[in-house]
Length: 438
Image (cartoon, rainbow, N blue to C red; front, top):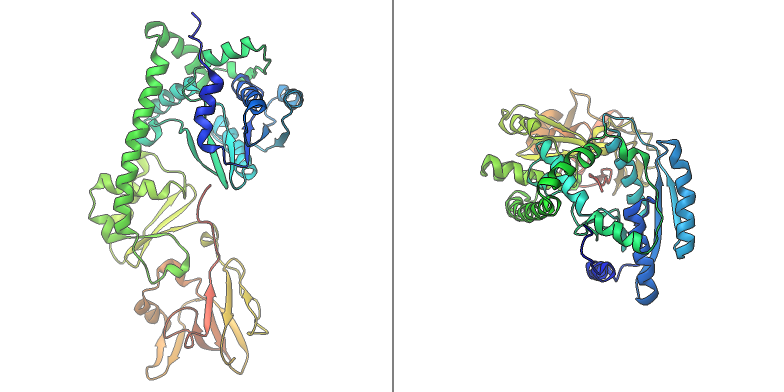
């Protein structure tokens, strides 16, 4: 039975009305049925409505020989519709899941292409939503995962929007047939070694034979779960507001939370708050690996616990937890000679150093802590640097990166530490890192 006719153009316009102020709508155009219908719909609407500039982007993964012909097909379709096309070749990194690796490569290209105030439009539909829900349910996902495909989210410097999520594949097929559209059939879509294809070809036909509305009701469940996740996000924001206190070491530029505020929460609320906080920073672990958080949380005060995650590390120090990624995971290289302290010194993998005031006479050098350093302080005599750092409360992960200024082999100043920085003359700017994922 054919699905009831729907006004797809009107439905699409309604979904995208809030985004009409964007400078560009870029369609992710694989050449398949879904993206072909989306591209055609928008190109036709642009003739009668004032829409942002339309562009298309085709990602060539290079995973199968048949794909070499697809850019040409996509180019001919775009030429006929008057829509500029960009073809991007990506390298799919080897990994346990070819599907995930291809998706990661594709979205890296999308992130790079999406500029400020631009929209990337993808053509996932209601059937994709139902497949995603069941696939993640079988993997034991939580509420966030079972929310399935979000209708919109930030991407790069712009946003990703999926305007067809409440449209079925059957409705897209009917529209394509009515308008005599042609599209690519990807041979890999029939390969049932891929889990999603197995669900599509083996499981869903059986489900829909018994329950014809299964896909629609599963997509509705995903929407309910998405709403529930929104409430959990609101709760996380409330809990994080108490933990995101000001630290005297905010100048490090490292995201951190107050440990005492988190410890007041139940275990479930701790996980919820941390999941919300970590989501833009790293891929989250599955439930079996959250024991790493418990180990970090429950470690003794004199321990140096670290929770290693996919894209960085969570450290506990100075009464807080700290998210380290990027340059913070590298050992800084030796500091170069500072022949002119009146200029900024660039430190390999460790930001930059500046000196203000009267430059000390003598041979100046910059080093990092090795252990056993001693510093002479007015009125206090010679003091062990380790004890001075303990008194200052410097987080352990930062101590090996603090620039030390020597004059004639004598430790003169420790950057940024009040009372040890040469009366504020030695200023260190750590590497400005984005600290997270787009």
